[in-house]
Amino acid sequence: MKSLHQFLTLATVAAALTALTGCNPPGKTEAASSGKSASAGSPAARTWVGPGDKDEYYLFYSGGHSGQVFVAGLPSMRHITTIPVFARYPGTGYGFDEESKAMLGDYTWGDVHHPGLSKTNGLYDGRWLFVNDNANNRIARIDLRDFKTKQILGPIPNSMGNHGSSFVTDNTEYVLVATRFSVPLPKGRYADPADYEKEFNGAVSGIRIEPKSGTMSVGWQILTPPFDWDLGSTGKGPSSGWAFWTSYNTEMAHDQLEANSTQKDRDFAAIVNWRAAEAAVKDGRAALLDGVPMLDPAKVPGVLYYLPVPKSPHGIDTDPSGRWIVASGKLQPVASVFDFTKIEAAIEKKDFEGEFRGVPVIRHDAVIEGEVPVGLGPLHTQYDGKGNAYTSLYIESAVAKWKMPPWTAEERADLNKVILDKISVHYNIGHLVIGGSDTTQPYGRYLVAMNKMSKGRHISVGPSQPEDSQLIDITGSKMEMIYETFTEPEPHFAQILKADAIKPIEVYPKAENTDADAVWEAKDTGVTRNGNVVEVKMIAIRSHFIPDRIDANENDEVVIHVTNVEQTPDMIHGLGIVEQNVNLVIDPGETKTVRLKMKKAGVFPFYCTNFCSALHQEMQGYLAVKPVNVAAK
Ligand code: RUQ
Ligand code: CUA
Image (cartoon, rainbow, N blue to C red; front, side, top):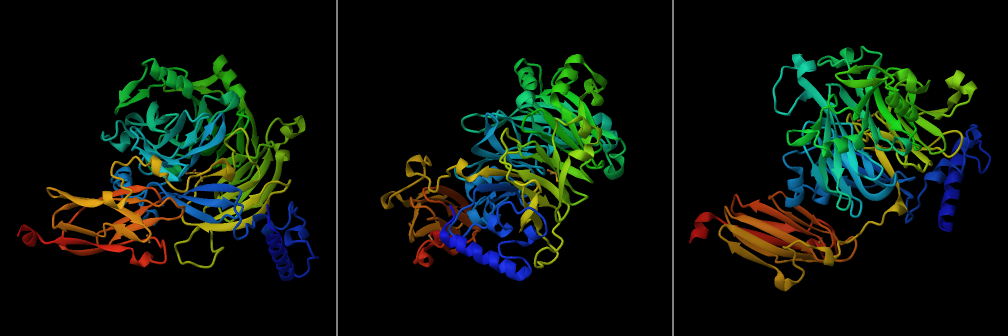
């Protein structure tokens, strides 16, 4: 795939590196001479995607409280685009036209944590990317056909702080969601936080996905005690039909959680049989709470079990086989490996160590396979599909690579022996991602460490510092750091998708434009008045708008529908109206609408915001607004 030119460039880069490091013999990189394996050439060679060449993978980063999703390429780590989801984004005009404005509602931000790709038969199918909003209890669907946000569901009833999502089931039946904070339910009810244990509740939810359209709706919810639900994952193989979430704060503290929620040595994970929950709702065993079906697990046995896991856990990750479930306690330096086949057997035999509010607590020792001493501050675990697990160590600023069960008797006797490798990251890693780790067939080639601190590993940009992400090659027996990049705050989790798994469209085909207000020819454009409403049907094409003059009166409502009639990729036009806060960006073949109230008279120029041709600058016009007293004459 690489061109001759590129190889020449690589040789030059390698030579330059050698020159810089001085003592390396030709062809040997610094990494190689320092005894680390350099599995396929120098790090520079392995991340180098030359001008005109393309990356092999997409990296979909969550954008944290930016409310967006960042798209980068792997292995180059180059930022390619930003998909706005929960926040306005002038760059693509998102949140300025009527449709996206309506989707955003009154919220101006979101907090994106965990993107989840849609799946068919347990593998990514390249249809949709779901992302959650921890702040305003929403979940969004991005269509990978055009990389646009198509639906925002929420605020989800009975959910407060949608952190524990977006976890997608094997055939995208559901995106699973758990509430982080507990509140008096239904939302809007007041209770004194001092009565937390009695009055507050949490919930886990199944967001149903319509198989053809991807339309999301709340399928079912399960009421829980006021624990703080944290992270989750969905089952597969033997655990298909199940889902798992960790919680912190089984102490049910309502204040000073730093101390009060870290008392117990174990917190509960939720083991949820979502197929049973779905069936129970069908059988009419749910009660409506705030308009959605809520199951009480004490009255509907079999939908929920608790599993004690050590201490203040964070990540809980099902392995590609679906048999092993790894939970990490932030405050214990181990990753606990649970055997789902034993969990099933324990449920079958009622091997419980008690119950909590009518929900059985599975006996920990009956289902634990081992506690792997991974290191300090374990958070999340990913899998390479070759029997290895990789756990992020926040406190240690490292990634531990370790061997999954089955273990030999010798390994079992001393689980230090299953730790295969450790690599430092910079600094305080949160999530990490391996492509396809949550599917049955991980790609297992690269690992991206998403670090919470960058601590000046970049030229200074002042106090507001970016986050640091590092690319690690995991093809060899030793992990190898090969690249580092920076993003705006704050990637939590990410998903990696093979680039050839999708074929996005680059123009909206004219035949598919169903907008009733779309116009394609000059003769169909125009300005019509209906009482106080002035409606404009407009065309944008290199390098003019038709019409390029709009007349209105003060206090009129002006409704503009613009169709970009181009069918050429990258021929994007914009419509900016000066001092009117109008910023439409219209992709080829797309129609967008904006409504504006003409609050004051004057003549307001409008222009194309996207440099589309040599005469782009000439692509302009006037919105002429007469004052009321003149208009009346
Ligand atoms: S969290 S650093 Cu919001 Cu996914 Cu673990
Ligand atoms: Cu159209 Cu610039």
